[in-house]
Length: 281
Image 1 (cartoon, rainbow, N blue to C red):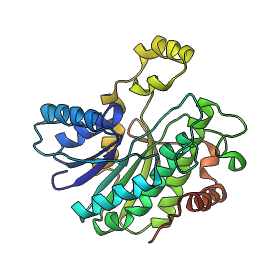
Image 2: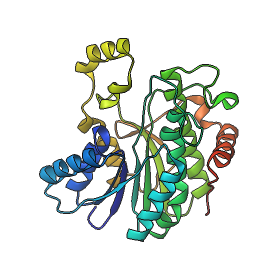
Image 3: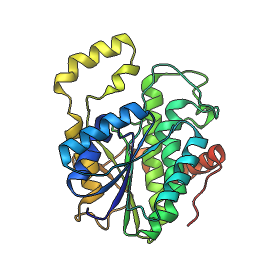
Image 4: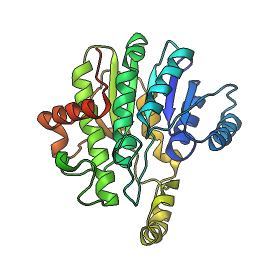
């Protein structure tokens, strides 16, 4: 990975930080996207200590804000003209319904729409750096459908339902983006990292936290959860793979609806309307 510029979102903790460590050990040049300066600096110090890497770049951004995402992309393009790997790792799991400054339900905005925007806004740079890769962190917790009539969860907000819908959206988008960019030298794949013990617990309801602690002994560490992300970013074994879902570094099946191209195209069109961003291929 020497000479490869890799952007990792949500890199100050959990799977994102572990992914950054894994890539740094392979010699990658890191650009970390984090929201909090203090946590980011602490993570950078830890990554440097564990890997011996001398320089790590940081861009602060709030991925719940569409303006923040545009500012992030603008700042990145000021600093770099190449991007070889984009890892969309940032995510939230919120117990209460919160709207972003753009009026969008926060879980859907951060877990999916931010991915959609970054992939499209950075595609020109990725294409100019080909072969390049996009890695989207999804989950095996996937909804059975996308509720296009209530994407903002106004009728009923459920923490698991909101999270599951956002992760289904990530998978649908990954497959559709692969179809639209086929032959460009940019691959895009998604993955289930396993059930990982991360600091997302801080947003859980008390009874969920209790259950989480009970099963925590059987959950993966962030280091193990990051293995598939690092694999998809670096291995030569999947050079031709795009539009696939991985689990434990192997291709796997996602839920049936995720392969429905009509639903994927509808999601794409809705996403364009919500963000004002589209693919310039």
